[in-house]
Image (cartoon, rainbow, N blue to C red):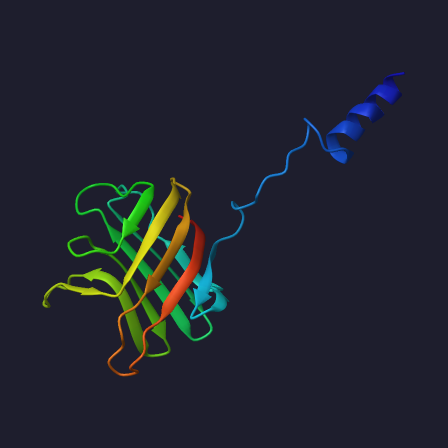
Length: 165
């Protein structure tokens, strides 16, 4: 009798779906940063990282590389912590992205340099869905300004990320 009871519990726990098992999206094991660049899917496969939150979340930056491309996002709360929500690129808020295709750079958002005036390029937004001590997760989309050397802009859509901190 004890053996049958043990087999029944084992069956419920490991074989049959039900209250003792759960299906869960596994975002905790792997970083990802992906989307569509001019309609073509991409997924970063190296140098995927995000700022740690040791000093708070006043600045959140994250990046990734694939093929001959790299992408860098930057959100500056300008003294306040960045929280979950949507961050639209607009003048006055230091939210931006830089995309590099080999040596050609493309940008969207608001940029302020040390020795140069602030500029606004392109359009877009970053949406943070989760921020914790261990990871950040969200979505993004943007259209860069036209690169003076190439005469082209870049359109990135359907972007999503989960990056350990």
